[in-house]
Image 1: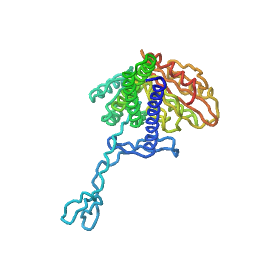
Image 2: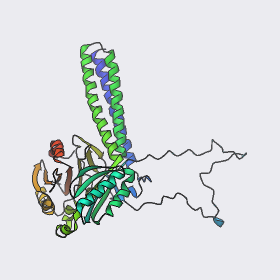
Image 3: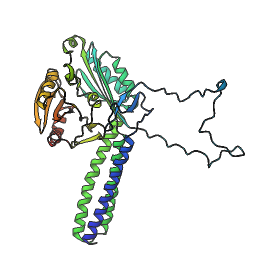
Image 4: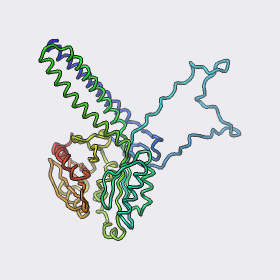
Amino acid sequence: MNSATLRALLAALLLFAFIVLSGCAKRADLEAAGEYYDEDYPGYDYEETESTASRADYAYKEPRSSSRTRSSGGKGGAAQPSRYAEPMDADGVPDQDDRPPAEPAPVRRKVFYNGFVRLRVTDAEDTVAQVVEMVEARGGYVERRSLRSVTVRVPVDTFLDTYEAVQALGDVLDESLTAQDVTDAFTETELRLRVAEDTRARLQELLAQATEEQEKIALLREIQRLTEQIDQIEAELRTLSQLAAYSRLTVEAQPRQLTAGSDRPPPPGALAFLRRLSPFKRDVAANNKHLPLEVPEGFVALDLKRRFVAESADGAAVWAHKRENQPQGDAAFWVAAMSDAHASDFASAEIATFGAWQVLRLVEAGADEPYEYWVGFRVDGKWLHVVEVYLPSPAHAARYGDALRSILSAGET
């Protein structure tokens, strides 16, 4: 096989992969355009909460009735014939040719819940222990724990019950619940994996047939590159599978004698949203406009089309949104306002500049392994861009800090 033939084959394989992945993205766009309600996740409706086609948020609603039986009305209460009744031939036998086609079984959606509850309690440490015991009894596990807060992962089929049970442990001061559908991300990632594996297999066949050393070297390099890509895609699939199987719940317990002084009123007017920002809540971002960012190395995107959220396999997360820049201010103004709203709640607050972003870096108080919470602001015309980062421990900050700084310095994709 000469070099020209080898280059032609490689080009054909790469073109095939590009066409398949482009088709996958188009299909996902079409699927994302419609609403979906899955009775496997009661109480949630997937709908657009803004009149914009660029994003769709998942908002909590009252559960729909689980009953599928409906009265047909009719005289004397008799059931009326179903419009899906099987057609009969002259002998009363179902006519196979006239039978309507069977509807395809609905796809089971993969949903990741992120919940947060802040409670006023008598004994904060005891409440945290109760949450841990409750979650472990339901098959979950602790992701992060301190004296007055705990982040747990709960099997998705018991998550809503657990979320309600936790709220009964004290007086609810604040709570938030968002649902992220990761089905499309999972499907696209699976397809990328199949294409990469098929391409590698074809290159391995070409390698077995190659006779020239230069051809073998070129093929081996491409096979090595694809193998590294396959390893990365498999890691992304494991992360998405874990998120779909175990949802996250964070509980903060505040002792009753301490809450009176800590419950400060929120900033006035258009600044009030700053007080609602939290490392454990994503409802502010969910209810605003989509802001696309580059996915940091080591993270996997849960949804790039409607809401930017990316997670690592070990619990770090980054999410973003944009809103009108009201009141008018530059990035430094917004960082200062964020510091006024939150700095006293944390052990330290530092301001950094990454490209056009001004970032407030907050570090948890009173913990042996404190988490970090970053909130960054950037102004683009009439829009205020907001990015939030949660790093569960100093080890996470060391592991992902450079990658996060890199995407912020690079700006919007």
